[in-house]
Length: 218
Image (tube, rainbow, N blue to C red):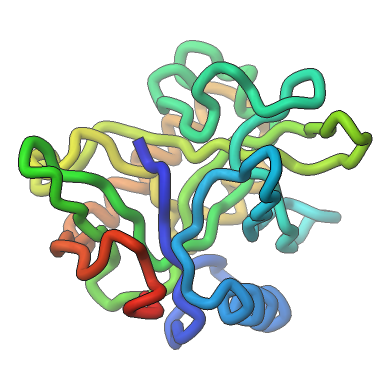
């Protein structure tokens, strides 16, 4: 599962949207700087660490601060909701009606049994996107949010020894389709094929600090 990731404010390359909107990239950079390089984690009930999410809007794309994980009857879901298996979406494509893209510069997993944290990134350290499914949520006090769950797939062969799952990465050329195409089994099948084109570019290295970017700014 993916339970934490990084968003480096110093990114120079962005492999996020085919026609990267300068306002979106500027907004992400400002958010990342305000986040002080901290690891991005699931949203908590008390500490509402809302995270950037690229969402479809009026045929285009925008970003908004969103809730990582689902809200059910005003509370964080009792079931695991920060990740969704791609296989589940293939079996039940109704979950693909709402979709977004999670901007990240890396993600983190623990290698077992040595319990060493590993960092996964693209070979050029660019900002990239991971597929997410979304649904509306409301807290007990009536605040409304877009809630998201990162779509996970079996890991690429060269990464499987470190961790058996990885996010479904969205190449820039497929970003518009992921955000705007009709939902259904076809879109997740196409996303998996598109994601495979990035497999060989994913690198993994031991993470320098278990605390996250406080030491490294990613």
